[in-house]
Image (cartoon, rainbow, N blue to C red; front, side, top):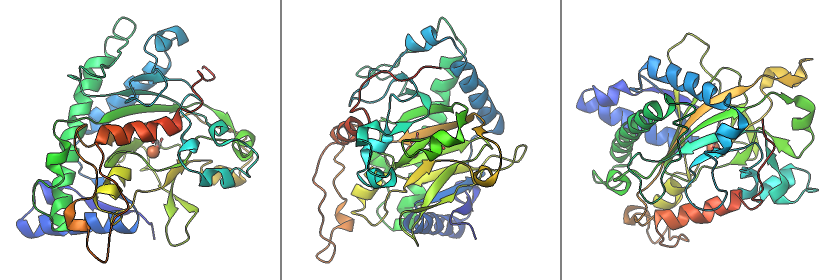
Amino acid sequence: MSLVKTLDFDLFTNGTETQRKQLGTDLADGFVSAGFVKLINHGIPEEVVDNAFRLSKQFFELPKAAKAAVGHVPGPKPQRGWSAVYAERVGGSRLDNLERSGGETAIDELLDEKEHFDWGPREDQEFPNPWPDKDFPEFRPFMEEYFETCHDISIKIMEALEVGLKIPPGSLVNRCLPAHSEARVLHYPPVDVEVLRGGKTRRIWPHTDFGIITLLFQDTVGGLELEDRSVPGTFAPVVAQPKGMPSELVVNTSETLQRLTNDYIRAGLHQVNIPAPSKESKKTTLDPRYSIAFFFKASREVNVGPLKHFVTEERPTTYKDMTALDFNRERNATVFKSAKAGKVY
Ligand SMILES: O=C(O)CCC(=O)C(=O)O
Ligand SMILES: [Fe+2]
């Protein structure tokens, strides 16, 4: 049986009171037990998902100079713009990746074979988005809209989670307005399986995301894996829906939710590695892979210390109070320690 439960989100958006409660409970259970759920009838129209993949591919096909013109400046601030292959290194966010690599590489030399473009809210003055308007005018209006669609759905998921956790309405939602989330399109270029077996490089090293939850769409290439919590440190595939089927939205729990719930909901550990069928197959080069993530985050000035509901004498906390922005900065600093521009495709 799959570790990841598939839930019909329409039961929350259009269901009876009983169905809404049940969906909330199932969502909270899936988050607590696996850190991952999949949603069908998630509310993002199929053509929007298809167009997001189409435009994302077109972006990555732009000449290097056009992508570099909207490059993310590596560092702890919220991510905005293009990061070349090897620029962001999520391996550095967890010390246990050193053991996974065999321990012969410095933690900030663990490489992710991926490139991505990240953006924040359209109206953000503090951390504005660089857009390739001249080279690719279609990209910005669509992606700005896509961000808002994902934000609205994330708010609904928070409402469902409040129901499931039996905490007062608004406890989570109010911490996420205004929206200070980040969206990301990813491209994993073709890569030699031997490179990924070498111990230093994965498509993306095991990590937990920094926000509250992440919404993810993936293509059918495979390779996304979540930790199997029944055997800590081992991974199981998050299988993609075959082409032509209605899309499934993968939702995983992230570090800020772990803080807010004082470890009641732990962040889902995940990676992208060699997809299962290729492990034995003769194929030596993996196909390119595309995915689209929405990192739903708390508002910058919000305290991301634990909610009082989750702190008791039996469950004291070790998490200090801090703002969402400071937490984000602290975590981002761990993935840009080696702030060199990477290999460029
Ligand atoms: O590409 C994927 O499926 C996962 C991407 C991811 O985990 C991330 O960017 O944080
Ligand atoms: Fe992730």
